[in-house]
Every structure is written in structure tokens, then in C-alpha cells.
Length: 253
Image 1 (tube, rainbow, N blue to C red):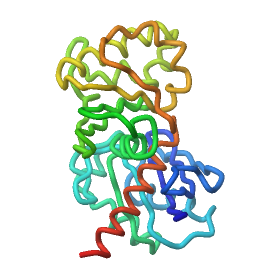
Image 2: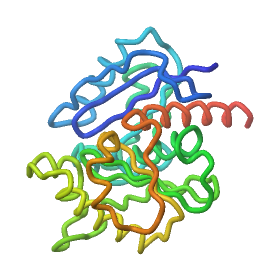
Image 3: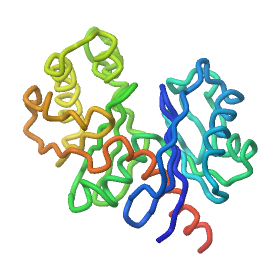
Image 4: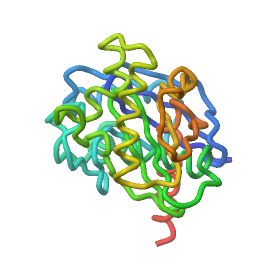
């Protein structure tokens, strides 16, 4: 058993736990701090440092982050604000904590967890993992390989507005929608994703996956839908798995 600390940076909260990277089990309590608002790098690093103080841990950290991530670098503006554009995320957190960080897009981390250890472990072909939370994340695997930074939630939907602005869980709460009312919006997003990507399977994750039975009757796409095994912990788990694999590949070079 090998344990790695995983951190999931979200639009409303930052969560962390120690992860058994062979099974995906959490080996500690999951600790959470609120995402600061505003959330520039200086404020965010302090929140991450506060979160890490809850653990007696000194080693590699896997971190998933709500933006396009290329080699630890934020390529786009996240829902954390403009200040994160073009920031080298891994180096920023490493300087603040003294620990090595591996950083991955949040939905990609969820896809890693589900495809390697969870609901997608035995699925072949093109598999889309959709995470529902503050936004709509999308992680894509094709025949066992991650294709990163898909960002389907940014597709234009109703009146040209990005789907994640009105079909995310934040929109459901803000507009006090019933589960079926919101499910109809989410179904429109799935129909577009199905048409654009033609996946063989969908995996539905994020916090609302725990309530899947409340909106599944609103979903009409023919493509098979699977509920995530790790639910809202998938980002933590996938980030930890990714960090461990990055460490191993670096050691063998």
C-alpha cells in the first residue's frame, strides 16, 4: 500500500485526504476549507497551507485544479478568477509548502480515478466522465488513455450561454430548481456532448451523482450512463494517483 495526499481545489471548497493509490480508499478523514473569495494565488496558497497543516505528511502531493492544466501551468482563466491565468500552479504551491506538487485538471483527475480504479475500470472505447459541481467538468479516456483538458462545459448552449452557467449544480441551487427541472437542462448538455464526441459510455460524477435516482428519468440519451464509484472524492483520488504515477515515471527516466 502506498499513500499519497490528494487535494481537490473547487470553486466553493478545497478538500484533501490521504489516499491508498492502489485501491482508491481514503486513509484519513477528508478535511475541507472554504475557497477564499477573491482567490488570487497569494490567498489560495495560504488556504492550501492551512489545509495541509491538518495532516502529519511530508511527501508528494497530487492536486486537481479547475482550469486547463498543461505541465502544471494554468492555460485558461478558472472559476477562481483572472489572477490565475498563466500561473505555474505546481511551483506556486511548492514554494508555499516545501512539498512537490503534481497538478491536473479537476475533471481529468476524476476520470483518472474512475477509469483506473472505479466505475470505468472495465469500460472500453471512448468514455466521458462528467463532473457536476460549481461548473460542468469533462474528462475523456480513449482505449485506456487520458485525453486531457476537454472542457465540454464551456460549449455554448441556450442563448449562447456556456452550459455550465445554467446546467451545473450551482445553477440548480441558485434558481431553486427541482431535480427533474435541472435534469432537463443537464440532459440538453449530455445530448450535445453525445453528438459532438460520440462516446461509448458516460460516467456521471461530482456531488450530484449521489442523487442520481432523482434526475435519471430526465436523461434520454441512448449512450450508457454509469454512476461514479468515488462520487465527490474522485478528484482527490485521481490527483493522488496521478502524482504517484508522475513520481514513478520521473524516477525511471
